[in-house]
Image (cartoon, rainbow, N blue to C red; front, side, top):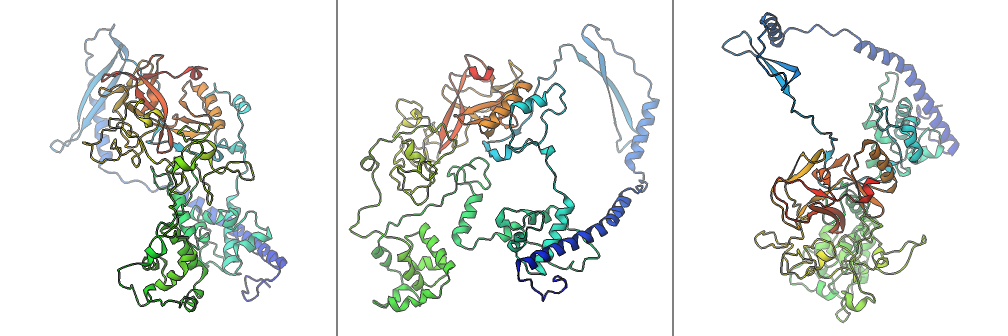
Length: 625
């Protein structure tokens, strides 16, 4: 007897479950191929019918009148022209309009001649505009999705494939998934899950279906139903079953910590960005910081506010805590974990406020909170350490050439020496003898963090007086106080070392330059001013090698090195700085600068540049290799 037909029979053993999955699969398979030929025939017949005749409209009448007027128009005499100045080919333009006063079309004609001085437009390759760099992981570049320059017979595709390596192979040679099998599988899962009561893990355990089902195993088969229409077979007796859930509905987060982690995953963790679904800082692992308590128990318990409710902790009697511990025994573990997460974020809140956030009584929070965080006592030393007294070696600010966005992100360990089982240092900042940055995952009072910024009283433009300029980083608005880097009032801000943070760049325009298209200054630019930022796709070493070969074929190379392991390519995504041409002695220069922990390529003027002058910089010897 079929278990699907008789839901009261529940399979017990693995063999019975596997047999049920196989029978259901074959049932859906046979129903589909009994239904599909007729359904496809109906669809093909519906689209092969002759379209109904189109009714005439006012546009058709106007076109007919225009054609008649053109055929009756006498040829116009050719104007006198100098044959030495006019090309032989000419363009004849007919312009007609039907006005309200005169229903008949009025026809005007003229001949347009191209002068010999007219030049063709320079060669140009378009790109998508962007304001910031976009990081695309190497795993998405392991497959060659389409043949490059497929319409160009001069491109040697076989030679290119011999020099490069794509771990995922060529997409057009990969075996395609059978869409019929996917639809049959979705209907099989729907019947097994809702009628037989099998979980996705139990279905996967049988290994009967061609693909995995459970999202916990990385399967995305459940999301196919929002990309494909489920088939509607008239012979199916289970068409009233509910729809399958999506992957995001199956992988639900039970605790507050998991839900916060999911939110942080989709929200950029870089403090200078904080954009949803950021495409720039995907290398940064999300680390939720644990805030260290600063108040003592006495400071938290001492309050002049009245009790928040009859269950306020202020009503707890001395010595009665043991009896009241029974209040917390009935709480589920998930509720306790949520309270612990809230305390990790805001440990100094009063028990009354924590009770509102945790949806508990004030007494329950007061009895549980002291085991979830260690508060300092009145005679304990401060948790804040001095970098000068705690560290044995001096800290410097230097570029990490081997990484792009590489903050330390060890969780549960202080910044210091030590390596994991793979020999990787726990703290990259410690191994590089450099300061921890704002987006590092360590405690905010970490001894390696920068405690102060520059102390400039000028405009932060001289490397000899500004430590930020000397170390090739922009001023930090939270640390550089004296130069007014954070001041929102432009009348008082005199710091010139925050241009990228503020999104300020010099206005430029693209026009025909010395070599094809070029970039020109719209207004006068002073020496040392930042002109703009070179942006594009951030790619790794392997992809850089592949694109360098493609650039040799096009003779257009937009690759720009960003350290030892990464490059920026603005061939497909970029901004106007990609049009700056080469000159051995240019009027601007390119440099890598740290902006809030990001390594970015900036162009700055090496001399005063007048308006409408073209911008040049030295590409370097490696560009022409």
